Every structure is written in structure tokens, then in C-alpha cells.
Length: 273
Image 1 (cartoon, rainbow, N blue to C red):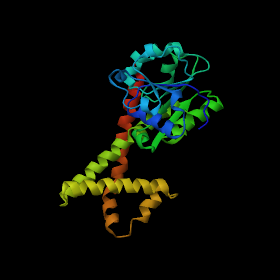
Image 2: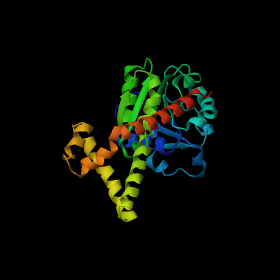
Image 3: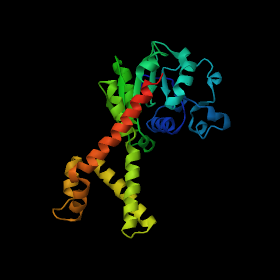
Image 4: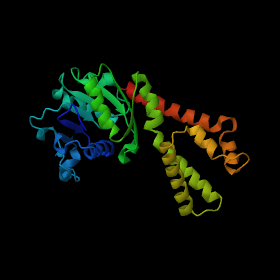
């Protein structure tokens, strides 16, 4: 992977930060070029040193490090306290990439006024290389855009947005979306139990059904609507079940209400100082 970044500093080595770094290493990003900062490293490096990544429990161990990419992989509620600590790294040759929900690009730019600030929203499927990430930036140089795209594509599909206001909808759809699917599996398994299956059998079948359907959706060039039609024989069992889900747009309306609630929460987080 060819990148315009020689030194990458990642703030936060949780599930998302860790998944991204693992994806980069798998794609050939030199481990020595990646520095991870996380206070939990004071209790152990969690295997990162063995992978060749440089770990730091705090700013004091960074020394004279001069990163050209700073990735913020921390929780939104931590931003206010953490951002000022990294302000000294600000410069016209640096790129800041945020993967935190609800923190606007302008808010980050208040601290990093000289850097190229880019906001992204990945989801948890990045942990298995199947993430969906939306990205927004203004006046991003072509080489930087290509580099950020390559880094994020290491863990899944990437789309660039034309308007940051769309990020709240992205958060509601793909950012929170995996939880909706997991809950659907729970509901399917509970329904299977009500029909007489054991809890273990019902959950195993529900899980694999969604895993298989997802793989088919990912590998097939056909639309979701066509795939649905392919498995729905007129007058058959699937048609009977779908008639309930689609009655009066019940499922569509429920998903719309679900995503509106998530979008509104994303907006509320972004509006906080």
C-alpha cells in the first residue's frame, strides 16, 4: 500500500482503532510507522509490540515524534479533554482523521486550524474487514484523499460524502446498523423458540441465516430486492412470512423510526460544546 503518510499516530487503541491498525498491517503498512497512544498500555501492550507497532501510555513517551497523520479513535465524550493535548502537532503538512461519532469537523478544526481535518464514520464490522465507512473532508489534496481511502478500505467499503450534514444519517444507517441486525437475530431466535425449537438450535440457525444472507448480498451483483424475489415463491412459505413484514409498510416504517432516533441522537451529540 502506497501512502502519503510516513508516520501515523493513532489516539485510542480500542476496538475500532485496533481493527483499523490490524487492517493496515495486513495490507503492508510498515508496523514501525504506526504509533498507538492509549493509557491502558501502562498495564501492558496487549500484543502490539510483538506486531512491531510502537505503543505509548501517554504523550510524554512520544518525544520529538512528528506525525503526518493523526487518527482520533476515541469516544466522543472524551474529545473535549483529549483534543487540546495533541494541539502541538498541528501543522499545514498534517492530516487529522477522526472516527468518532457526533464530533464535527469544525469542532476538531478549532484545535487543528492548520491541518487537513477529515471526519469518518466506520462501523464495528471493520473488526472483520467488512466495515462500511463514510468520509467527509473539505479541500482534501488528491494524494491525501487517496491515502485515507486506502487506509479505510483495508477494513471494508468506503464512500465519500459531499455534505457533512449527511454524517448523522450515515451514523444512523451504517454506524448503528450492525446493532439492528444483531437484534433482528435475537428476535428471530426468540420466535424460533416460540415455534418449538430449542434455544441453542434456534440461535444457531438464526445466526447462520443472517451470516449466509449477508455473504450472498455481498457476493451477488443483484439488488437486495431481486435477491428477495429470488427466494420468494408465489404462495409459498417465504411469501407468507413477508406478507406480515410488508403489511402496510410495517418494517419500513419501524426502520425509519429507528434510524430517525439514532440520527437525532447523533445531531444532539454534535451540538454539545
